[in-house]
Image (cartoon, rainbow, N blue to C red; front, side, top):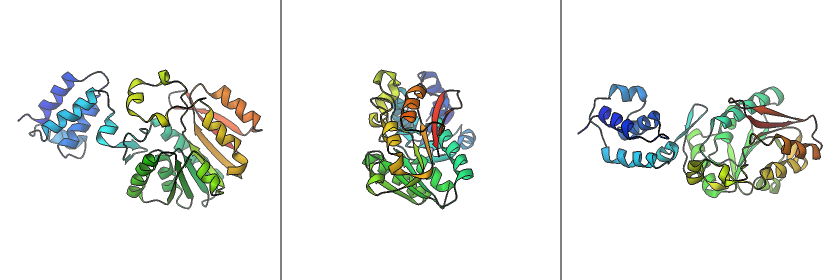
Length: 277
């Protein structure tokens, strides 16, 4: 039987460009029941376990499937979350959205606030904020029942107080006459299929990607601010990098001059919109 080392280097020689070395290491850790990269290094010359299972998973990688869907695991702000193809894979930009929103909340609100994560997907935003602000009432909404199931599965791991609501965007909140201090949302905002990376389009849920027009879901929320938000509030959006002009027009039409700012992500791309009163 080959060693882990032999399988690793054989896979490196065969891998396609989109497959990373870390992806291969992750699969080797899983199939050899190891715990970490350090553990893998220690056992590098051990006999390979579950070689056929590894080959099947490696073939999925070679075909373009994301490592997070293969392992059913994604990282977010240093923690591991369950994911499947019902939800988007959490991105680094969304980590920044949560971090920026959390900083604003700390300095502008008391502990007993009401927060909603709209379009929750895997639930990482709602869970992160509920863990950070333990005195808050937190809601998480999604139109997809299967996404809500994933979010609930993740919350079972972290065991924080979140009320999960299935429904279209903010409708479940409006139906219950909920008034929010903070709303965080990473909605669909890509207008054209051809703008989406082919691997993303093939494997990630289209419902969480496409919006026509791109501003559709932002406009719905902004138009309902008076019905949804308390007088002192924060709305934190993740946005497409080319949406500043169209969103500014919507904000001004709703009398929000001087109440918003756009922020760039760590790559220097315009990625966030914060509306504050």
